[in-house]
Length: 186
Image (cartoon, rainbow, N blue to C red):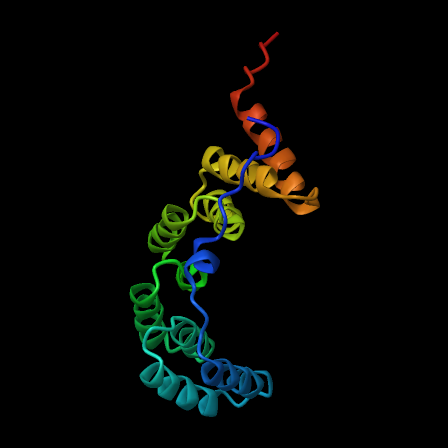
């Protein structure tokens, strides 16, 4: 269907996230500075300590996973992503970033499962729909499913999104060619 989604479900991560303690926010800002300045090992140490000090916060686990992923330490990244999901099932990055890592490793079915988990938690997750559309189109060769997710992205967008519109046009073109009858031989 075309048109916009009348009432977008708010991001449950933002709805359910309580205020983190001020000290945790300060420490997290400091750690983000370490990451920005390429001091990954120090950031890993600080995030590990932060996870011990604030076990109910999922952000440190997600950021730890991202750092491990950057270092190609996939086993530890996977563990940290899964721990983040266990800490806060509403954290969208715990699913979507994990799915991107899996996709980059060629684990397409596992990536799909993570995107679907993200959408089960929040059906209006634009990023999960977009990335799942890409996965279906480019990696799993399921253009019909890709079109569904890009169409949902379009419906979720407050403003027109050229990238999404382009995907939709291109997919519709391919799907229409695929279903068009073959020309008769003369």
